[in-house]
Length: 118
Length: 108
Image (cartoon, rainbow over all chains, first blue to last red; front, side, top):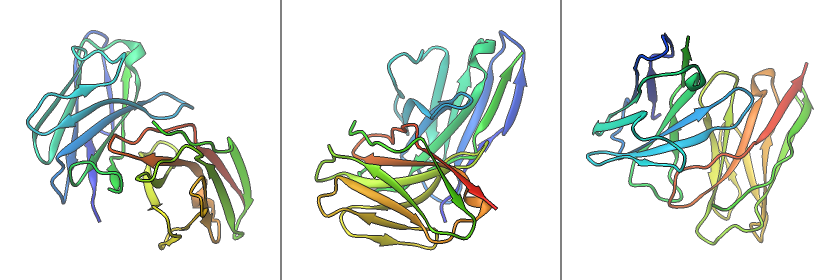
C-alpha cells in the first residue's frame, strides 16, 4: 500500500535555531501534501497545503515566514520551522494524496515528527 | 467545512463488536465519509471510506444511513490494539479537517 514517511521522527533543537522536517511519499507521486500540527490531547490542526511546484497555501493564523514549506518534487515536501521557540514544540504530521485532491481520494499520513524546542 | 458529531469517548470489551457513531446532518451529495484512527504518538491511519453504500474491508465495516446524515463504523471484534482516537471526516475538495473524534478504550 501507499506509504508516507517522515524524518526525523524526533528532534530536539535549541531556541532560536531552525529545524527541517521531511515528508516523502515512498511509492506514489503526491501532487498535494498537507502539514498538520498536534498539541498534546488535542486534535490535528491543518497548517498548510503544499502543491508541487507552487507556493504553499497557509491556513489562517499560521505564519508562512516561520513555517517554510517547500514541495520541490512529487515525492518530497519539507517543513522548516525557523527561529524555533518552546511554544513551537509539537507533533508535526504530513499527509499526501495520490492525485489532485478529490472528495473520494484516500489520504495517507506520515508517522509524525516530535519537535521539542529547549 | 461540513461538520461531524461524535461521542467523546466509548468503551468496549475485548473481542466484542464496537459500533462508533457519527452524525453529519449537513453532508452534501458529493461528500465521502472517511474514517481514520490515531494510535498514541502516531500519525492517523486510514480505516475506511464510503459514499452511499455500506463498505467492508479487512479492518472494519462502514454502515451509512439511507439519508446519509449518519454513519457507523463497526469493528467486528475489538482488540487491545484497536484502542485509539477514531475520526469521522467528510471529504470534499479540501484537505481533511479533523474534529475531536471518539477515544475508544478496549478493556481486556
